[in-house]
Image (cartoon, rainbow, N blue to C red; front, top):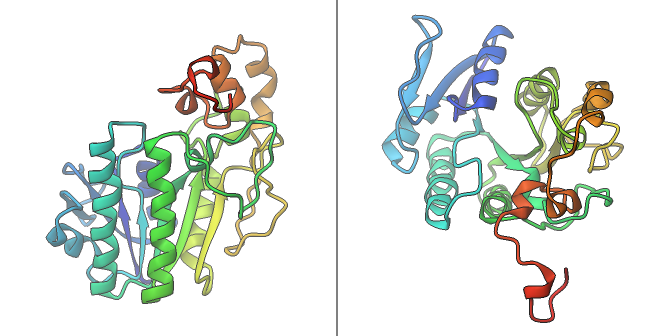
Length: 271
């Protein structure tokens, strides 16, 4: 079995994958910005700043697939987004070129599409409508994956991850965006095992009845989620919805509300 590199292993999704993929027998090298506590004496660990080529080299040497989760995962000022989600990603892809990595699995986000209204069902070829600098960085990252496949032959899979927390959905929006842990592990295993895919994108959510995305559309990696956030709908709908009016209107929720210009303050713009 080939070595799999996992960046961002100290985050929520990374921590779930670190334990879940090891339990399924995958040979991992895991990386975090800060040193990670080993899960076993023989765990293959790397730490450091992925903007530094030497750190990227330690992570990628001898690996076949990179699952890239590292970076800023919430809305932040633009300089931080540029450093962690743009500059570091360039170094990661250049490292993949140096080391002959076959495939990069990029953690994109639903927030690259967050300014769509909640009533609209999206397909894989829907245009980007990011809800902030974070979502914008994910649209840029998807374009980078396309570039490195077209120009350098590195396969790319963009995972448009919804809400993955390792626990049940907690609010109305998450009934549409939730990704259960078992589905998430299945999703990543398909990213590792799927035969030649070139460049492709996949909606990273469970089989939610209220999904914002058209899951009936086939995906290139054979991802078939079985969990459904609707199992928790009754208890969620019995609680008051604390989201503001903007968050209720757009798929990005609170990310869309952040720094939003109301219609009455715009000069001829749409609401």
